[in-house]
Length: 165
Length: 165
DNA sequence: CGCTTCTTTCAGAAATTTGTGAAGTTAAGG
DNA sequence: CCTTAACTTCACAAATTTCTGAAAGAAGCG
Image 1 (spheres, each protein chain N blue to C red):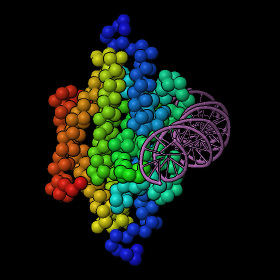
Image 2: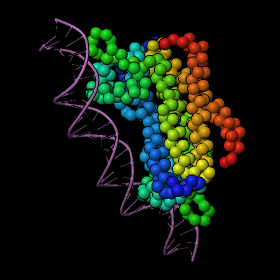
Image 3: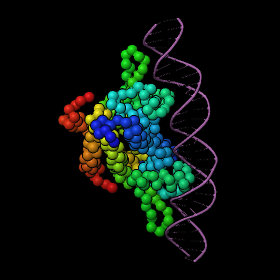
Image 4: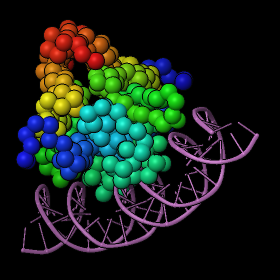
């Protein structure tokens, strides 16, 4: 590395993008969304256009479109329209994205629903039913805890980073 | 439903198994491990043999073997050998499994490593570097919080379920 | 020590998922 | 209005993943 401040050669950026994307994939995200997201995260703007993404990642516009749609649904990126041009920019909103990570509320709710159903089918007084009741209680507990945790994080963040957007 | 206490007809059990497995799949687990796990969870023993699993789920011994290996690696089930027979039983250990769910420590560590690398590649003083530094701080925070949360859960559980195994 | 019973491994068929090119759609700007 | 620049959708080819049958590998038990 010849330049210690703000080294930003395409190669090392790309290396990071791919390695971070790999982690996301391992955690269950699809390949394209993961790569797109990693690319956005490592851009200084925190935002890129469709074309830029396509060029950096060597993927087709169709792939960008699909990946971005997924990320937007998960609230991990937001779409912007620079007024005037029809060009869109996709932005990773500072901290919004990892808040989205913990917003698995919908997921937890579905788990809870499935477990309730399980308790009903199996009978609350069977051993299996009791086991599931406990599991259900665990998820409900986690549910509440996560909300509290995120509140603590916001305080923590405020003091450490001064609440910049 | 004709029998209100302990209704356990194969059909409704199977229905639950598949629907819970579907949730697990959606959350990123592979199909077979998910089904196997759901089957174990809904068994009264909390444990089944390879053959029983194969019969209930209509899958080959090979599929059972593969699925169980995965689940054991994730510490979601443990293997038992009833001394004597060479037959194995796979058990979902009451609460061990959802504790395993939160033991994503290894995962978090890898994310943190990837992000550190990112900060290094991009430069700590670039906008992207700063954004990643904050993200990194978030994961470190979550890391610690989860440990604390699980401790609170154990207390909560004790009072509510009386610490049964 | 060999027979039998269970589990694991492996190669390949089948199914699913993924990414692309091409056509389609929408809206800006002349 | 018509042209053009962008994004999206769709059908298909390619790559990957998943599950199976068959064979091989362990370990109890006579």
